[in-house]
Image 1 (tube, rainbow, N blue to C red):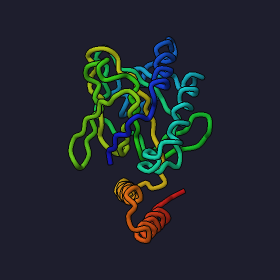
Image 2 (cartoon, rainbow, N blue to C red):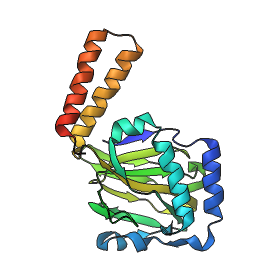
Image 3 (cartoon, one colour):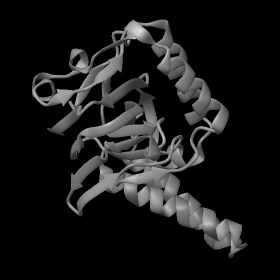
Length: 228
C-alpha cells in the first residue's frame, strides 16, 4: 500500500526544520555513508550525519508528531520506528533504482529493526525545485510522489523505488523506516481499510451493534497477524 498523509507537520514545524537544516553546514555529508552495497552504487545525495545532535533533535520532533498522527498509526501499525534521517538533493543529484535493506541497526542501541515500511516526509515545497520525484514501482504499476512541505508518503520497503534527478533548487526531506506489528503488506492494507471503514461508519452514526462486531473483527485479525 502506498499512502499519502497530509499535513504531518504544520507551518511552524516546517519553518524550524528548514532553519536548522539550511544552517547545518558541515553536518551535511555524502549520503553513501549509510547505503548498503547496492544503494551506494546509485546513491548521489547529501544527508545529515546521524551522529549529530541536530539529527537527533529534529528526528525526535518528527517522532513526537507521528505518535499523535492517527492516519500514520492506522496505516503503519508501528512497532518500532528508525530515528528519522534527513537528505538533500541538488545540482543533478539522484538516487537510482534500489530496494531498501531488510534490516537496520538502530544507532547506539544494539537493536535491529525490520524495515517493513519506508517513509518520506517532504520538507521543501515542490515549487522550490525541479525533478526530485519519488518514484515507486509495485504490483499495481509506477507511482510518483512530489508532495507539499509537511506531507508524507508511506510505502512497502520491499518496493523498487528511486528519486529522480533534481535539476533546479534543492529537495530536502526526512526519510526513515518502520517495523510494523504486521509484517505482511496485504494484511496491513486489509486492516487499514477495515479501520477506515469503521471510522466512517462511526462518523455517520451507523448501526452500533454492527460497528461493535466489525471492531471486534479488526482486533481479532490484529491478534492473529500481529508480531509484537
